[in-house]
Length: 301
Ligand code: F2R
Ligand code: MG
Ligand code: MG
Image (cartoon, rainbow, N blue to C red; front, side, top):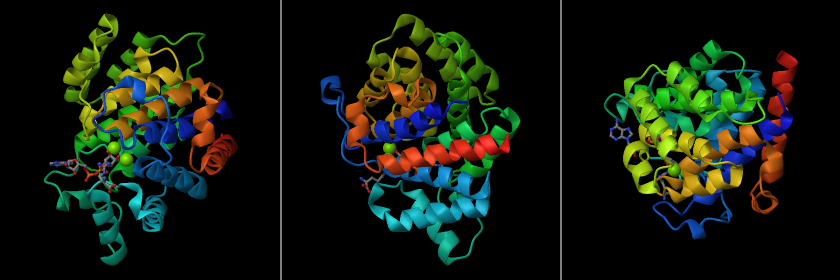
């Protein structure tokens, strides 16, 4: 378990988010070589998860919800989705509990947005060597705001991809084996279908238009988690993975953030272009956070 991979994962998320922010819908790959000056809700909430895991030395729902709310109130302008601020309000003002699946009161069947998946990477890092626990903690951390099956399964696949990436030790990534592990772990038919299609897209090196058609690039977890996994798998380095992810357009900050989490966990901080690290907002805080998360994990082992 290398500290550089924990740092790569958290910084990769913030960089992918900053690269995609404000570029939603953009398709011109030549425009996406530089990051913008701000990250968005994706990184803000991922920071909240890391802070809570460190604070509580593992998952604690009350603490995590409290930190989400505190961070939101300090920076409500980060571009949060429609649902989470309303849920924070219910917890804060109406004294509701974090595990009441409050999103079901906003959306029939709960939210299937990608808000749980976009923030979940620190859980993939922290529980990378405990697969059963990983699924359970992903479930609990998701239902604070997202209880629809598609949102939770998307968050699980994203966390599991991070856990595979951070523990990958071969000299070269075996893309098809990585994909096979994801296919074997999913419990949802719709994700399984997309992961099967992904195999063909990888073999064909399909054009982006086809990737968007079959995997999606939207705000729904089912239409963005597969796109992020694919963006990591189809490229040979971190920079290309992130530029590719953002160039899919649609929910670009979130697909960029999730790709950055997986690619950062695999390649480590050393493979992130310096010019991106230098421009990143709160870079030192995010790097320290990754270090503290790594230390808590090490001390627990
Ligand atoms: N697009 C945003 N944020 C919007 C605000 C941007 C604005 N420009 C600003 O600066 O303020 N990006 C961020 O939101 C996405 C994550 O959203 P999250 O947390 O999943 O929110 P929510 O509200 O739960 O779901 C998002 C949308 O999904 C659709 N949806 C979800 N469940 C549904 C259901 N059961 N039925 C129908 N529709 C459902 C809705 O359209 C929701 O609005 C990330 O992209 C993040 O970057
Ligand atoms: Mg965002
Ligand atoms: Mg987004």
